[in-house]
Amino acid sequence: MPEGHTIHRLAAGLRERFGGGPAVRADSPQGKFADGAALIDGQVLAEADAHGKHLFLGFGDPLVHWVHIHLGLYGKVALGAGPPPAPAGQIRLRLATSEAYAELRGLGACALVTDAERRAIRDRLGPDPLRPDADPDRAWRRVAASRTPIAVLLLDQRVLAGVGNVYRAEVLFRHGIDPHRPGRELGRAAWEAIWADLAELMAEGVRTGRIDTVRPEHTPEAMGRPPRVDDHGGEVYVYRRAGQPCHLCGARVRTAELAGRNLFWCPGCQG
Image 1 (cartoon, rainbow, N blue to C red):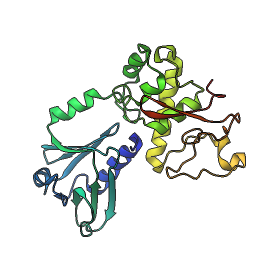
Image 2: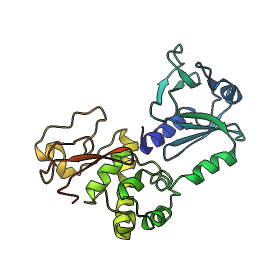
Image 3: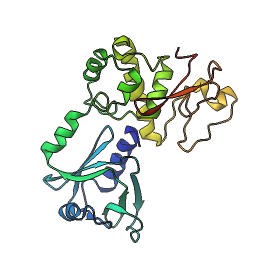
């Protein structure tokens, strides 16, 4: 599932192509969002707002319609220049002008919502490190009161919005934190360091479109090691490196299932 930086990057791409006009042509070649597409067809994209893994598109001048989008496990978005090509595949929603288009496929959610419904969805989510209005203390209060392992809390979107399995594994490694440590044993200073690091790492992910988490002194060039070869791209410390030696201490990276998700950590650096 895409992590929060991907959704913020998508929101920025949609604003750049369609924000403020001209009016967009909207349709649903697949047919599952035909009624919603008909209502926003011919409207101006007034806002593209990301909160965690959720995207909200506001249409109209004045703004009258919101589309709530969640990519889910299989969602894909294609952004292109010029008029859109002939529909191919299961396109749930297509937006187009004479100069640009966006095609959204395989979405976990795509629905028209009222402004009250949009706010209710956001209220259920924890603070997003990429949002300027985020309140890290709100997440800290939940972490500090919980016996749940910090690795589970970081993936709970009600606690912290936008963090996925890669950022979870990597930020805990970067701060030498045992992923099994209960939230209430974390400590305020450690939480503030995690939050600040996530905000910086995820902002870099928005900029580059990939997840890189190794510090400059640990890059392949700096350490004289081969670069990572993985479908996810990016240089990481532990994510999907189970059984391989840690870049820092040489211990074998471990993996285990925790709350239904694969966890990766270094027993030497995070013991």
